[in-house]
Figure 1 (spheres, rainbow, N blue to C red):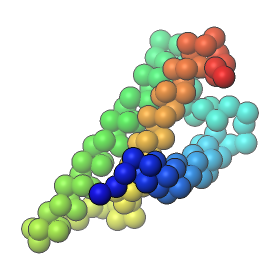
Figure 2 (cartoon, rainbow, N blue to C red):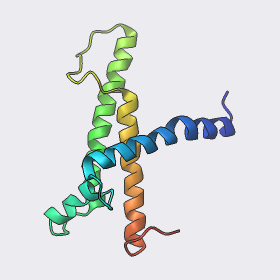
Figure 3 (cartoon, helix red, strand yellow):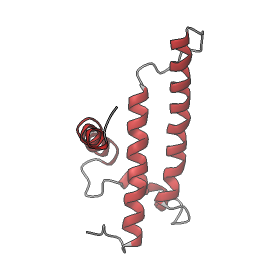
Figure 4 (cartoon, rainbow, N blue to C red):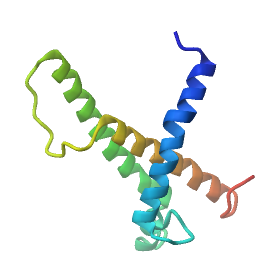
Length: 124
C-alpha cells in the first residue's frame, strides 16, 4: 500500500520535477527565448483575431494526446497479453512521454485561465 504522503513525495520528485524540465525544454523549442512562454499557444488568438482563445486552442492538443495515449495503452495491454497488434509508426514515443505532454497541456490550461480571470497576470 502507498500512503498519501509517500505518493505526494514520489509524485513531486519523479513527475513534477521531470515535467518542469520538459516544459522548459519545449518552451525553448516552441517559443524561443521569448518573454512569453505561451507564444506558440497564443498564436491561435492572433490567427483568429481573438475569436478562438488560447484556452480553446489547447483543447484539440489535449484531445490529440488523449487519442495517442489511448492507442499506446491499448497496444501495451495487447502486447502483454501476447495478442498481435499494429506496431506504431512512431516507436520512440512512450506512454510516459504522452502522459507528461498531456499533464503539461492541462496545466497550461489552468495557468491561462488564471491569467485571463486575473486581468492578464497570474495571481499570487
